[in-house]
Length: 574
Image (cartoon, rainbow, N blue to C red):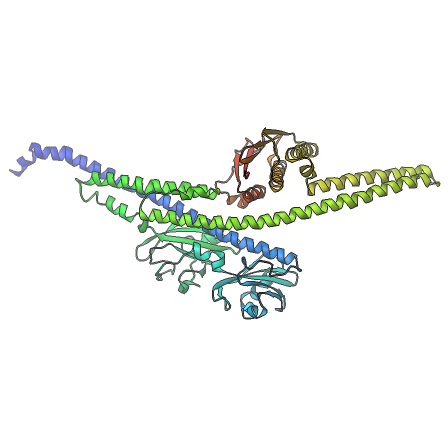
């Protein structure tokens, strides 16, 4: 009797229509869940990798700035240590002899005598004896003067060591690496139990040198995901499985200088677990499978995928110096909004750092240009005049020589030619140190002379075109623009293998736009401007830094075999 019921229309409809459709819906739901999860993991992984790179870049730049200041102090032994550097080395500065004798200190000798220099500094001095330009970074320690966790940065020059003390608070490490409210130790000692992101530093041997939980300092994390790659100079993101089954998203990046590795990790389930739990209900409730799957996909697209893509675009623009993008709100789940809040805070930190860096570089550039101007004036007013006087004396000697006058005239004529050549060489040297045409004739005539000299000395045809109404700009802006064009042509000569180059200067109402184009071999420009120095494009890095002094920006357009074009936009204050 029950066999007959199976052959009924209602059962047949269930078996041949509803059941196959249900199975298809379940399959589609499972397939969609799989694709959805992979997409989410990829986007979150990329975002964590970018966060780690930005944090590591911020820390690397802070260490590089202080290393450069130490090199300047070491190169100027008469420079007083209290010349406004407490804002960079809040723990003070000192000059120490190789035998441990403290020569000069700031703020006080007593303060430096309380610091364990013999333990923190001198074990590493012998390693850098043959590398005078390589900085020494001490282990982190609690400064007995300020009571704050600090770091010693030192530079060995001859028999003297210049050392500065900077706190982690001054470096901004406490801002980019906030500790969770409550931290517990896992099996490998690197997991935060709170809701906040955990950020920690490891040395080149894999030991933890900084962690929000002081109990984790000294732990060996060589086997932890991302640690080995970060200490080898690589950056990226991966996943780490905890013994309790929790999965962590791990971003890692190297900190240049001390060869540290910076690790950023957070629980994966904190980001996407709610959406994934809703999606996994589909196999259990067949009738509601399609609705749940549709809702989950819609939710994921609207509140997870699209916000993460928006954050990805903001992070990309942030890498190129466009800080206004991060101010636009991003809709989505709470974790994504928290990520945007973190990204915005990081952008503010970087912007503050760049403001300080611009002031510093502007000071250094002003000093360099003043020195060049002085050298050019001395060479022009003294050396050239001396050579001219020498030429007059040679002429007088030609008239008074009586013995073998023919041979004497020949030698004196040669001497006269050498003197004239020396005069021309000194004048060229003077023009290279300071573009006199820029001061005397203006920006555009100076570029015309630069194009002519480049074509004459390097056999590279250079065409100059000017757009807009030509006007004089502030002298520091004109000098920066001239140096940018000069460096751009230098890159063409050294690297492009070009047959011709074109310069375009556009005078706009609120900006000065410079374009340097060539028909050379071209190259693949990096997506992230931080990779310019890593790939050896130091000339482009210098152009970008000069542009950033005036809140400008650099755009590189190039393809292999199709030449290169540099766009530099410099805002002009109205």
